[in-house]
Length: 312
Length: 263
Image (tube, rainbow over all chains, first blue to last red; front, side, top):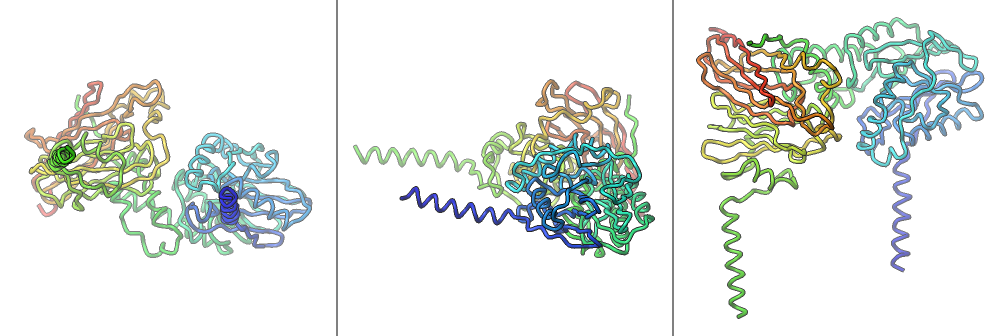
């Protein structure tokens, strides 16, 4: 009898946690037959389960094209089901990974690996760092990550254009947020999938950033003909607001940290510096700023501290 | 018989408690399982009190377990003799110890973390009391047992000891000096790589008097980056930094301190 009661208790727990670990993904139609699944503008936590990223999918004449796959196998599975429900009966012909950060590609397992494509450098980065990311994501998100392994794309892209299922896409090979940031434009609708080169109302992240090339990439993105921009994080953008905001933030970050390094402030002192009020509306800006101090300080120190001749 | 044994028990308990009274360890606000061991090993004598005047700045979470920035500011305390930092759950917990004889009780450094750990900083004042502060830093694993990044480069020996440094003004009577020296700071815990680290550094004034001495240990991050505040007069001066590693390599250099503004 006691055993039976314990069994009941567990069954209740089980169903409660199963409900808890549901992403409840929603597809929002942003343009004709083009859907975005918008994540929260937060950092990874047990409450959001890693759903902090934007992914998207497009119905093309003969199938579906997917841009990024989310932070985990669980998310990837949920995304695939959402696509099947939204665009019933059409095969997934192509999955693009915009870059190698874990929230953008760890859902790859849910898709046919032979369809997953990215620039060679993104593939290399995933091969090098993917499983380390998966380990750390498991540490941050626990059971949300169950069964997740890093799967690298199998198709290495280098063309400027690709036709998928009767639709043409322009492909842009940029960098700055990471060493390889891949941007895709649907040439029919003009929707630009900018990945994490563009953030909107969410503080940009910098673990692999090179601010100078990021700046150059923003200039390229501003020059691309588009109807709408889907940033990697934050709401969709039809007036390049995300490019202006991201540029403003990374310029401030670079300037402010360069100044802190030249004043000899320790990283901890730099972390405590005020953030301008105009960035207050950016989600998790204090947390991301503190992370950025650790990311960007060492290279600035190497560049800005004077080299001293040692006594012989 | 029964009452005798009871008396003996009470007597024993008294002895035991007087033993503790000689040095009563305060409860650790960080609730570290290693607290007693840390106190016994690294703060072996003198009373211990947790003290808010020991300000330990550390991130809540280590963005990079190889480079966790820590800044200790105990300038609110007078007569500081020694500052000792330890990462309780590291395989080698002792990080660094500073004797700021003619420097402010302030130090910035970076450490490697093997896992999430409490960081305790003990600040000993001239009366022998240890004033302790600390923080808990969340971290992914492996900071102490992975090879240094330098070993990814076959000619890392060529840049050993390469130094970047500068000093500015903290106040009219103190400088703020920051230095960064290229050194792998091998812990000896990565397979096939023996311990090899910068272990001594001293700052002297232009007459050769010691202003600050610091002992560094294995957990200090690769390419040690240190910030100190030596006491200096308002006029421009030249400090001398001397340091050596566990292989006896010596790295010495002068460091200009500008005059206080308005002088």
